[in-house]
Length: 364
Image 1: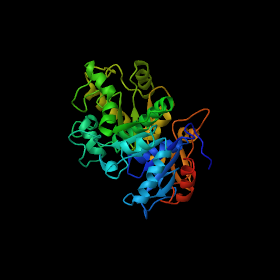
Image 2 (image 1 turned 135 degrees about the vertical axis):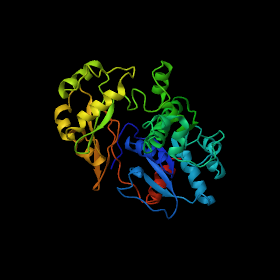
Image 3 (image 1 turned 60 degrees about the vertical axis):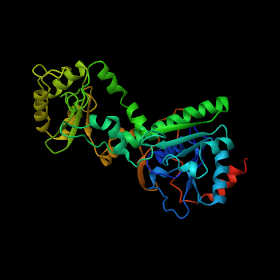
Image 4 (image 1 turned 30 degrees about the vertical axis):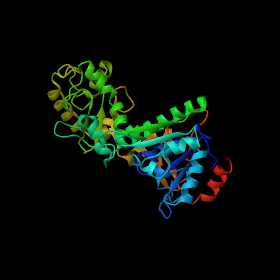
């Protein structure tokens, strides 16, 4: 398909990796950027099910071969943004580090995605999302009193990693286009996940957040901001933080808000939560959806991803897309004048070699 989106015309060179860097490449592609991925010769992949690799073309280069390395340098010279997610020092050892890249292309935005960052005592240690989030305090804050809960890899890889990498390289691209000056963007998951904790730091500064997990307003301790099991084993969420919304929840369900008020001090929360849990356990999830969904009671059922795709709200907004029979998230966010789009399925590694080299290298 013809590229569309607010980043149409932006050229991104992505060195193949795992997790956050590919997700960032997916987001940039969804917004219309021409993303070319450097894959390894003989690598497998491609097709609609390879969702994180969707929407970009692929070249296969052996980065231990000098001829292929020079091809990579020539592609770097034509790029606006470079994305790489290797351990610190790997790109330098390949002869593709920032010094070489910015000499070839002074306006290049060189995006680096790591867990620990480019420097620091842990910079060269192996790790994964869970380890990075553990170090930031975010993991310790999520879960019940007994133990932390693993928030998939949403807080680290994708929220604290890919999103910050994308934000960083686009901010740097704005600067480069205004000044002609490129730069390195050091996107570390420990930095991003800590940044995501800004609200908890603010609450703590006001004396409204305790380091004891499971005792705070937004971590499930409050009866008016929690998840409850229903009679059929399904779950629902309620979050009426404002007095008028809590009053509406009480009015619709019959919950005794006078005996168990929405007191932010934490007084009486355990008893109130037990009472609310018993009430919600008395009926099915569908019953509570019929009674509360779409009202100002701040309610939603807890759906799995298959149920979510069938929900009327998600259907009307087109939150999910289908590509070659594979359901996947649609591009986000939305733009009124330059809407993004899935630019196509993931390419088979190396499938676009001739086309990319003709497109990118003929321009220099």
